[in-house]
View 1: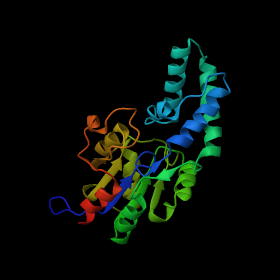
View 2: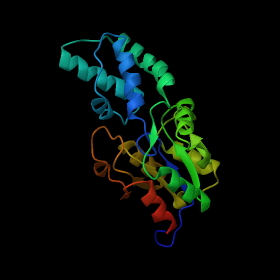
View 3: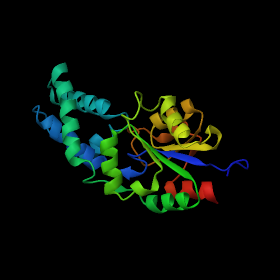
View 4: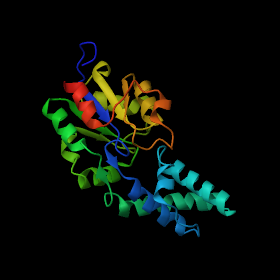
Length: 228
């Protein structure tokens, strides 16, 4: 409750908010760059680059490796590496993911109390479905909005707006929960409350720098805030 207002819809990001997918994303990235003669990188290094989508991840990764190793990769090879990432992530999605502590219980509590839940992610729908299913979270969501559901992705206002319209909710009683500046911007653009968790993927920057309305320790604290 905030000022007597009960939130009716929560739109929640996937990677870095609900589920830790860094290991499987890093494996797909490493398999991709190996095909172009670049050395595998440590998972923590790649994790620090996650937060702005697959294209930005691969561009940042290749640029850093080339700078450190004194190597170069042509534009066409960079594009090819991105395409190979898509292929490899198809194989790794859902294989090494795990829900963050308290996520399943929080979703169950929220759903049991009648709060509408939408997973809103920039990850392609097919991969999002794999991850949610592997982590046993699919059943708690009324809607999944993937990165290919619409012609635009977060932070475009239409993405969260689509969830609100589909579930017949209202902006005034909707909050978006995420782990990155993209999520905060998406909430701002859509005119909903911008909530964040501090443990996800924000390109190595603290989430406080994005200026969310509230920062919660985890989904359990979000559930308590909404329900208690």
